[in-house]
Amino acid sequence: MKRLLKLADARTLARIINLAERCRCTYTFVTAEYNGDLSYYHVHIELRGSDDSLRLLDSQIEKIIAYDTRYSP
Image (cartoon, rainbow, N blue to C red):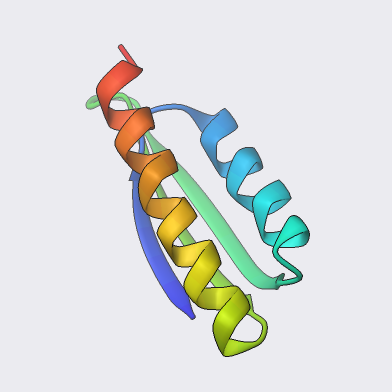
């Protein structure tokens, strides 16, 4: 599974990586670029795991991103 994310807080990426491990998934590729003018990170992450694990992880990532965009400055 490949995801392109726009994150306001760099710690959110750490949360996603930790969550992937708990969901029995692994990340095979991660890049993050900070856009200082707009104060957010562009993140590209590739994840591997069983279909059920990736489905669970994807739903949890959506919740984390919603929280990140709502409560970050």
